[in-house]
Image (cartoon, rainbow, N blue to C red; front, side):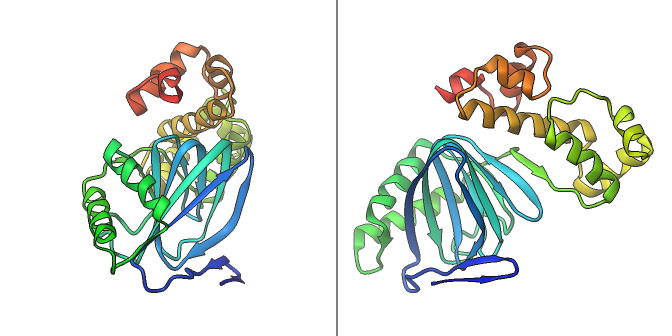
Length: 258
């Protein structure tokens, strides 16, 4: 049963007994799931398309064959770029002990992918069915060894940083330097550089690179060519975008989305 409160819709699990349940959904491009939260931890997997997950603390881009970890009771929205095939594993809180209590994007190995897809055909892993108990145990074992990947854009709270962030989020291709942006917003450059480090633990340049990478991935998922995605994301040439993409994910955009 779902109920609404100030922090979003409470999507309560209908199955209160099973330790692991699943959900299979396909969504059209542009579909948005409004602010909601669960009473369970969840692993949301994109077998096709790109999902953008937003919480109060940050934005996470979930490309194909990656998953986002969302602990219980964290309000979030999910927006689809391109046709999305979403497969979700719900776990009783803190059952996956190796994963943090904050959101993160993780690599999904071939084995974990197949385990998740198989679990989604079962829907509920029951304690009374030995094969399902074993399946849940192997999934949990695989989650202990997952690697996180840097596809997060931390949200900013200082009003001076928010003004700059809003300009760039509205147009990631804006090529003005930090000094130029500071003049527009009436903020000192040194103050902004210091505040970025203090608030999100990264430089302004790194934050901007993350924003551009995420925007490029969304465009590619929507079917845009690499050249268009590169220019719209703020890169002067496709080769510069491809180099950044390979550095972040270890593969070229064309190979990744193929």
